Image (cartoon, rainbow, N blue to C red; front, side, top):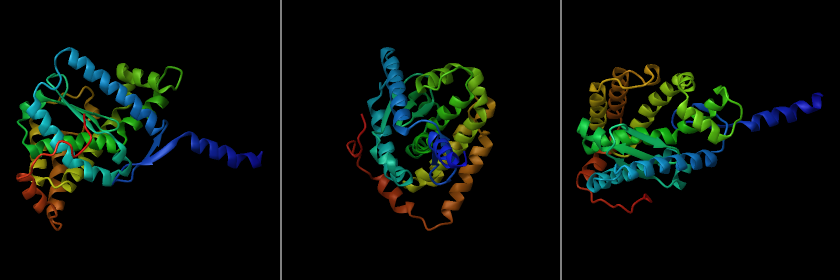
Length: 272
Protein backbone atom coordinates (compact mmCIF):
# COMPACT_ATOMS: atom_id res chain seq x y z
CA UNK A 1 0.00 0.00 0.00
CA UNK A 2 2.80 2.39 0.80
CA UNK A 3 4.22 1.84 -2.66
CA UNK A 4 0.97 3.13 -4.17
CA UNK A 5 0.98 6.43 -2.31
CA UNK A 6 3.46 8.27 -4.56
CA UNK A 7 1.46 7.28 -7.63
CA UNK A 8 -1.83 8.23 -5.93
CA UNK A 9 -0.40 11.62 -4.98
CA UNK A 10 0.83 12.11 -8.54
CA UNK A 11 -2.61 11.34 -9.97
CA UNK A 12 -4.37 13.68 -7.57
CA UNK A 13 -1.90 16.41 -8.36
CA UNK A 14 -2.30 15.99 -12.10
CA UNK A 15 -6.08 15.89 -11.93
CA UNK A 16 -6.16 19.58 -11.14
CA UNK A 17 -3.92 21.89 -13.11
CA UNK A 18 -2.51 25.05 -11.61
CA UNK A 19 -1.42 28.48 -12.76
CA UNK A 20 -0.11 31.71 -11.35
CA UNK A 21 -1.63 35.13 -11.94
CA UNK A 22 0.76 37.45 -13.82
CA UNK A 23 2.53 40.04 -11.68
CA UNK A 24 0.89 39.00 -8.39
CA UNK A 25 1.99 35.35 -8.50
CA UNK A 26 -1.25 34.23 -6.83
CA UNK A 27 -1.70 30.49 -7.28
CA UNK A 28 -4.89 29.18 -8.90
CA UNK A 29 -6.38 25.69 -8.99
CA UNK A 30 -7.78 25.13 -12.47
CA UNK A 31 -9.88 22.09 -13.31
CA UNK A 32 -10.03 22.40 -17.10
CA UNK A 33 -7.45 22.93 -19.82
CA UNK A 34 -6.95 26.47 -21.12
CA UNK A 35 -7.77 25.29 -24.65
CA UNK A 36 -11.08 23.83 -23.44
CA UNK A 37 -12.08 26.98 -21.56
CA UNK A 38 -11.01 29.29 -24.39
CA UNK A 39 -13.04 27.30 -26.90
CA UNK A 40 -16.11 27.30 -24.64
CA UNK A 41 -15.82 31.03 -23.97
CA UNK A 42 -15.26 31.80 -27.65
CA UNK A 43 -18.47 29.96 -28.48
CA UNK A 44 -20.36 31.94 -25.80
CA UNK A 45 -18.85 35.19 -27.09
CA UNK A 46 -19.95 34.63 -30.68
CA UNK A 47 -23.39 33.51 -29.54
CA UNK A 48 -23.77 36.82 -27.69
CA UNK A 49 -22.48 38.77 -30.71
CA UNK A 50 -25.00 37.01 -32.98
CA UNK A 51 -27.86 37.77 -30.59
CA UNK A 52 -26.92 41.44 -30.50
CA UNK A 53 -26.48 41.52 -34.28
CA UNK A 54 -29.98 40.08 -34.72
CA UNK A 55 -31.25 42.96 -32.60
CA UNK A 56 -29.29 45.52 -34.64
CA UNK A 57 -27.12 46.35 -31.61
CA UNK A 58 -23.59 45.51 -32.75
CA UNK A 59 -20.87 47.71 -34.31
CA UNK A 60 -23.20 50.56 -35.31
CA UNK A 61 -20.47 53.19 -34.78
CA UNK A 62 -17.50 52.37 -37.05
CA UNK A 63 -15.43 55.33 -35.85
CA UNK A 64 -15.76 54.33 -32.21
CA UNK A 65 -15.06 50.69 -33.04
CA UNK A 66 -11.87 51.71 -34.86
CA UNK A 67 -10.79 53.71 -31.80
CA UNK A 68 -11.40 50.74 -29.52
CA UNK A 69 -9.34 48.48 -31.79
CA UNK A 70 -6.55 51.03 -31.85
CA UNK A 71 -6.44 51.34 -28.07
CA UNK A 72 -6.62 47.59 -27.57
CA UNK A 73 -3.76 47.13 -30.04
CA UNK A 74 -1.65 49.50 -27.91
CA UNK A 75 -2.12 47.23 -24.89
CA UNK A 76 -1.29 43.90 -26.49
CA UNK A 77 2.54 44.11 -26.55
CA UNK A 78 2.61 44.71 -22.77
CA UNK A 79 -0.05 42.02 -22.29
CA UNK A 80 2.18 39.52 -24.09
CA UNK A 81 5.05 40.34 -21.74
CA UNK A 82 2.82 39.80 -18.70
CA UNK A 83 1.33 36.58 -20.06
CA UNK A 84 3.51 35.17 -22.89
CA UNK A 85 1.00 32.54 -24.03
CA UNK A 86 -1.44 35.35 -24.90
CA UNK A 87 0.74 35.97 -27.96
CA UNK A 88 -1.21 33.12 -29.56
CA UNK A 89 -4.63 34.67 -28.84
CA UNK A 90 -6.76 36.22 -31.55
CA UNK A 91 -7.72 39.37 -29.68
CA UNK A 92 -11.09 40.70 -30.70
CA UNK A 93 -13.33 43.59 -29.70
CA UNK A 94 -16.87 44.58 -30.64
CA UNK A 95 -19.08 47.53 -29.78
CA UNK A 96 -22.70 47.15 -28.73
CA UNK A 97 -25.41 49.78 -28.45
CA UNK A 98 -27.16 47.75 -25.74
CA UNK A 99 -27.51 49.52 -22.41
CA UNK A 100 -27.61 46.18 -20.58
CA UNK A 101 -23.85 45.68 -20.92
CA UNK A 102 -21.03 47.91 -19.70
CA UNK A 103 -17.94 45.96 -20.73
CA UNK A 104 -17.01 42.30 -20.53
CA UNK A 105 -14.05 40.13 -21.49
CA UNK A 106 -14.19 36.44 -22.32
CA UNK A 107 -11.23 34.08 -22.07
CA UNK A 108 -8.73 34.36 -24.90
CA UNK A 109 -9.03 38.13 -25.28
CA UNK A 110 -12.60 38.48 -26.58
CA UNK A 111 -13.99 41.86 -25.45
CA UNK A 112 -17.40 43.52 -25.77
CA UNK A 113 -17.94 47.18 -24.84
CA UNK A 114 -21.14 49.21 -24.65
CA UNK A 115 -21.26 52.48 -26.54
CA UNK A 116 -23.88 53.61 -24.03
CA UNK A 117 -21.35 53.11 -21.22
CA UNK A 118 -18.62 55.02 -23.07
CA UNK A 119 -20.95 57.94 -23.72
CA UNK A 120 -22.38 57.88 -20.20
CA UNK A 121 -18.89 58.38 -18.75
CA UNK A 122 -17.64 60.57 -21.61
CA UNK A 123 -14.37 58.65 -21.69
CA UNK A 124 -11.22 60.03 -23.30
CA UNK A 125 -8.77 57.74 -25.11
CA UNK A 126 -6.68 57.32 -21.96
CA UNK A 127 -9.74 56.53 -19.88
CA UNK A 128 -10.88 53.97 -22.46
CA UNK A 129 -7.41 52.43 -22.18
CA UNK A 130 -8.01 51.99 -18.44
CA UNK A 131 -11.34 50.27 -19.14
CA UNK A 132 -9.92 47.93 -21.80
CA UNK A 133 -6.85 47.16 -19.69
CA UNK A 134 -9.12 46.14 -16.81
CA UNK A 135 -11.13 43.83 -19.09
CA UNK A 136 -8.00 42.38 -20.69
CA UNK A 137 -6.59 41.73 -17.22
CA UNK A 138 -9.45 39.34 -16.49
CA UNK A 139 -8.35 37.18 -19.42
CA UNK A 140 -4.63 37.51 -18.64
CA UNK A 141 -5.29 36.37 -15.07
CA UNK A 142 -7.43 33.40 -16.24
CA UNK A 143 -10.34 34.66 -14.14
CA UNK A 144 -12.98 33.04 -16.36
CA UNK A 145 -11.09 29.75 -16.11
CA UNK A 146 -10.82 29.98 -12.34
CA UNK A 147 -14.49 30.88 -11.93
CA UNK A 148 -15.58 27.85 -13.95
CA UNK A 149 -13.21 25.63 -11.97
CA UNK A 150 -14.61 26.85 -8.65
CA UNK A 151 -18.17 26.53 -9.93
CA UNK A 152 -17.41 22.88 -10.79
CA UNK A 153 -16.59 22.25 -7.13
CA UNK A 154 -19.53 24.18 -5.68
CA UNK A 155 -22.42 23.27 -7.96
CA UNK A 156 -25.19 21.01 -6.65
CA UNK A 157 -25.99 19.20 -9.91
CA UNK A 158 -24.13 16.03 -10.93
CA UNK A 159 -21.54 16.00 -13.71
CA UNK A 160 -18.41 18.04 -14.31
CA UNK A 161 -18.73 18.64 -18.05
CA UNK A 162 -17.64 22.20 -18.82
CA UNK A 163 -20.79 23.00 -20.79
CA UNK A 164 -23.02 21.90 -17.92
CA UNK A 165 -21.00 23.92 -15.43
CA UNK A 166 -21.05 27.02 -17.64
CA UNK A 167 -24.82 26.79 -18.13
CA UNK A 168 -25.50 26.49 -14.39
CA UNK A 169 -23.11 29.32 -13.60
CA UNK A 170 -24.95 31.55 -16.05
CA UNK A 171 -28.42 30.81 -14.66
CA UNK A 172 -28.04 29.83 -10.99
CA UNK A 173 -28.14 32.81 -8.63
CA UNK A 174 -27.25 30.64 -5.63
CA UNK A 175 -24.10 29.44 -7.34
CA UNK A 176 -23.19 33.03 -8.24
CA UNK A 177 -23.70 33.98 -4.60
CA UNK A 178 -21.31 31.24 -3.49
CA UNK A 179 -18.72 32.68 -5.87
CA UNK A 180 -19.17 36.31 -4.80
CA UNK A 181 -15.97 36.38 -2.74
CA UNK A 182 -14.00 35.06 -5.71
CA UNK A 183 -15.67 37.63 -7.97
CA UNK A 184 -14.60 40.38 -5.56
CA UNK A 185 -11.03 39.11 -5.68
CA UNK A 186 -11.13 39.00 -9.47
CA UNK A 187 -12.37 42.58 -9.78
CA UNK A 188 -9.75 43.90 -7.37
CA UNK A 189 -7.04 41.92 -9.14
CA UNK A 190 -8.16 43.12 -12.59
CA UNK A 191 -8.06 46.71 -11.33
CA UNK A 192 -4.43 46.36 -10.23
CA UNK A 193 -3.24 44.24 -13.14
CA UNK A 194 -5.12 46.48 -15.57
CA UNK A 195 -3.45 49.57 -14.16
CA UNK A 196 -0.05 47.95 -14.58
CA UNK A 197 -0.91 46.89 -18.13
CA UNK A 198 -2.03 50.40 -19.11
CA UNK A 199 1.00 52.01 -17.44
CA UNK A 200 3.37 49.57 -19.11
CA UNK A 201 1.70 50.40 -22.42
CA UNK A 202 2.54 54.07 -22.02
CA UNK A 203 -0.80 55.58 -21.10
CA UNK A 204 -0.79 58.64 -18.86
CA UNK A 205 -1.43 57.76 -15.17
CA UNK A 206 -3.67 60.82 -14.75
CA UNK A 207 -6.05 59.51 -17.42
CA UNK A 208 -6.19 56.11 -15.75
CA UNK A 209 -7.04 57.67 -12.39
CA UNK A 210 -9.76 59.80 -14.00
CA UNK A 211 -11.44 56.64 -15.27
CA UNK A 212 -11.77 55.38 -11.69
CA UNK A 213 -12.95 58.81 -10.57
CA UNK A 214 -15.75 58.68 -13.15
CA UNK A 215 -16.53 55.09 -12.25
CA UNK A 216 -16.92 56.09 -8.59
CA UNK A 217 -19.68 58.55 -9.53
CA UNK A 218 -21.91 55.87 -11.02
CA UNK A 219 -24.68 54.31 -8.92
CA UNK A 220 -23.85 50.83 -7.65
CA UNK A 221 -25.40 48.39 -10.09
CA UNK A 222 -23.69 45.22 -8.91
CA UNK A 223 -26.16 42.36 -8.64
CA UNK A 224 -24.17 41.00 -5.74
CA UNK A 225 -22.85 43.84 -3.57
CA UNK A 226 -20.05 41.67 -2.18
CA UNK A 227 -18.76 40.84 -5.66
CA UNK A 228 -17.20 44.24 -6.48
CA UNK A 229 -14.81 46.42 -4.42
CA UNK A 230 -16.14 49.74 -3.16
CA UNK A 231 -15.65 52.60 -5.66
CA UNK A 232 -13.58 54.45 -3.06
CA UNK A 233 -11.27 51.45 -2.70
CA UNK A 234 -10.83 51.17 -6.47
CA UNK A 235 -10.03 54.86 -6.75
CA UNK A 236 -7.57 54.63 -3.85
CA UNK A 237 -5.83 51.75 -5.62
CA UNK A 238 -5.55 53.74 -8.86
CA UNK A 239 -4.17 56.79 -7.07
CA UNK A 240 -1.66 54.67 -5.17
CA UNK A 241 -0.37 52.91 -8.28
CA UNK A 242 -0.17 56.18 -10.23
CA UNK A 243 1.82 57.84 -7.44
CA UNK A 244 4.16 54.87 -7.18
CA UNK A 245 4.65 54.90 -10.96
CA UNK A 246 5.39 58.63 -10.85
CA UNK A 247 8.11 58.01 -8.28
CA UNK A 248 9.96 55.78 -10.75
CA UNK A 249 11.89 56.85 -13.85
CA UNK A 250 9.12 57.73 -16.28
CA UNK A 251 9.31 55.45 -19.33
CA UNK A 252 5.84 56.53 -20.36
CA UNK A 253 6.69 60.16 -21.23
CA UNK A 254 7.94 59.40 -24.71
CA UNK A 255 5.16 56.94 -25.33
CA UNK A 256 2.48 59.46 -24.37
CA UNK A 257 3.98 62.12 -26.61
CA UNK A 258 4.16 59.67 -29.49
CA UNK A 259 0.64 58.45 -28.85
CA UNK A 260 -0.71 62.01 -29.03
CA UNK A 261 0.48 62.13 -32.64
CA UNK A 262 0.07 58.47 -33.48
CA UNK A 263 -1.17 57.14 -36.78
CA UNK A 264 -3.60 54.30 -36.37
CA UNK A 265 -2.51 50.95 -37.75
CA UNK A 266 -5.63 48.71 -37.65
CA UNK A 267 -3.66 45.74 -38.97
CA UNK A 268 -1.10 45.87 -36.15
CA UNK A 269 -2.89 42.99 -34.43
CA UNK A 270 -5.18 40.25 -35.65
CA UNK A 271 -8.68 41.37 -34.68
CA UNK A 272 -11.91 40.75 -36.52
